[in-house]
Image 1: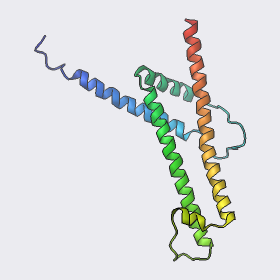
Image 2 (image 1 turned 90 degrees about the vertical axis):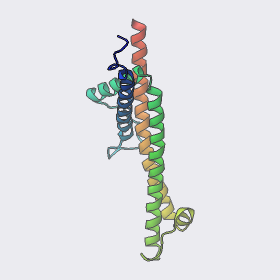
Image 3 (image 1 turned 135 degrees about the vertical axis):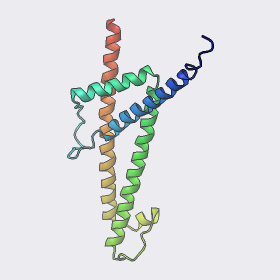
Image 4 (image 1 turned 180 degrees about the vertical axis):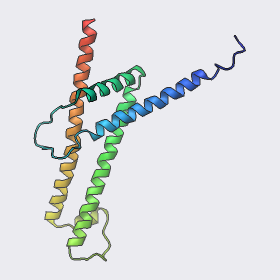
Length: 169
């Protein structure tokens, strides 16, 4: 049996396959969480409601259990946090850039004037333009945060169910 080389690389291949599967299901879970609450027509002043179809809840629960079994749930959490911060950063930059460009167009400088970037561009806005920009920023960031609050509620519910199952054994 010592001369069987066919199985010598199987352990390494299985480890690589596990890493690939974990990365794929982590990305799937993170994408699901980041797209949560992105549907239009949300009233950001209303308390968030946790609404999941049975299929979606079961799929999320399965992915979370798989990550827990592979001891990669904390890695998924870190990935989610990083992507959420990146999404917020991109959202803020895009909205501010759009607001500065709109302010430059309506300020009478015309289309030929270069758009000022950064703080100087924001400083050239009128008060109304600046307030409209802030309103748009808050709406978008609050939309993201409401979705994330829903995710937190689901995670807490799943954790309580898991604890109750363990206690009943």
